[in-house]
Every structure is written in structure tokens, then in C-alpha cells.
Amino acid sequence: MIQFTNASHKFKNGTVGLANIDLEIDAGEFLYIVGESGAGKSTLTKLLIRELKATSGTIRVDNVDLAKISKRKLPYYRRKIGFVFQNFRLLSDRSAYENVAFSCECIGLPRREVVKRTKEALNFVGLADRKNHYPRELSGGEQQRVAIARAIVNKPQIVIADEPTGNLDPNHGEEILRLFEAINANGTTVIMATHDELLVDKHPHRVITLSGGHIIRDSMNGGYYLDVPDEN
Ligand code: ADP
Image (cartoon, rainbow, N blue to C red; front, side):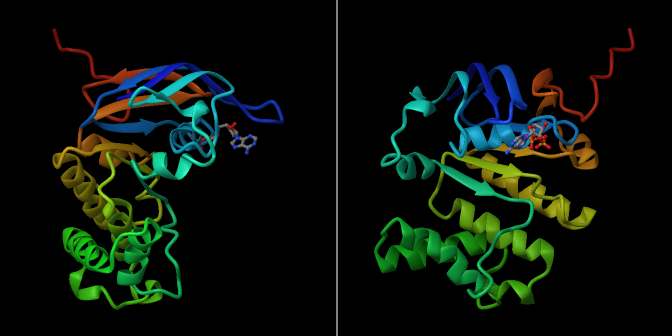
């Protein structure tokens, strides 16, 4: 479903964010992108949401070359994707319900559908009873759950999260990861950039390790660090 073919991104100042990436991600996969700060994780996620374009090579999603999507069609492409940020990015003057509903309103859904989808998404993240709370009245973990409800409310094919547990304590991080696993169990592809070693080790999924913009490891076995060799 997602194919990077010799894809690179060089910033205007000459810094290479990602270099010569070959990567295939199938529909329904759960993938961690790990690596130290500056390794290229955000660049990769930004390329996927077409906030950035590959400066060489190609990136295709469902066989569509992302570099060729016109400005007019970009909002339609982005409907395929739900995005979750480290710092939640909720609208502070809107309740949990309004933050989630806003995403449906933006794509012009009828009111009845907005209400239905918003309720479903808030139920899914376990926040139906907090729907009228404003972000400042919610814990960090709860705010991130609202952000996840917002990301999934339009039933995207792919959910991309950039360090979603980075601002949370380990218990809340674990809750958030379980939500992403539940989203994935429904068939959605999940791509999560993280350097949360504990979570990656505890919940094994495919791991791509970046360093200096290159993929240095692609492991189906999971685990944050190098594969443990067989004992024999
Ligand atoms: P990570 O998310 O793994 O911390 P990034 O993708 O943010 O890494 O960064 C990869 C490299 O690109 C780093 O060297 C970083 O300094 C550089 N970089 C990121 N954004 C920009 C930018 N807007 N302009 C120039 N260089 C950038």
C-alpha cells in the first residue's frame, strides 16, 4: 500500500532529512519507526502526509505518486490518513466532543452523521463521559485519547503518530499504545514514530530503525534494539 522507492528529502539548507529510502508497508501493518533525535522519523511522517515532498525518488500510496498530487486534491488524499502528534494539538476553546466533531464538519458531513461518528470515536477511546470537558480539564493521557478519537473519526486507512507517548507517563503511554493496537486490529495501518524503548519492547511489531536519514534495520521480530541472535 505504501512504497518508498529510493526516496530522499533534502531540506533547502542542504540538510538531508531522509536518504535513499526503500520501504514497503502493507495494508493492515503495525510499524514502529525508531531512531535517535535527528534520525529522520518526523521527515518520514511528514513525507507521508505530504507536508514535505520527496526531493528525489518516489513515494506511492495506493499507487498514487504523492509528489504528483495537486494542491486542490491534497485534502482528499489527507482524508486517508489520521495524524496524532506528541503535543496533542487540540483546540483549547472547544470541548472534547467539539474537537472531534470539527474533523467531520470540515469534510462536510451531515449533522446526524457528525453526531454518530463523534460519539462512536469518543466511545472507542473510552471518553464518552468526558465529552464536555475542555482540554485544560483533561489529563495528558485523556487529551491524547481525544486526539486519537479525532484522528480516527473519519475512518482513515492509515493512522500516523509522531511520538504520541512522548509527553505521557508510562501507564498512560501503555494505554495509548493499546488503543493504537485496537485501531490496527480493525484493519487500519498504524505507523508510529517513537523512541519509547519500553513500549516497543513490550509490544512487539515490525520496527524500522533510522539513523542519519537511512534505514539501518527493518525487523519483523520487534524490539527496540538489534535482534537478539538465536542461542544455537
Ligand atoms: P527525528 O524526527 O528523527 O528527530 P527529523 O526528521 O526531525 O528527525 O530530522 C532529520 C534531520 O533533518 C535532522 O538533521 C534535522 O536537523 C533536519 N531537519 C528537520 N527539519 C528541518 C528543516 N525544516 N530544515 C532543515 N533541516 C531540518
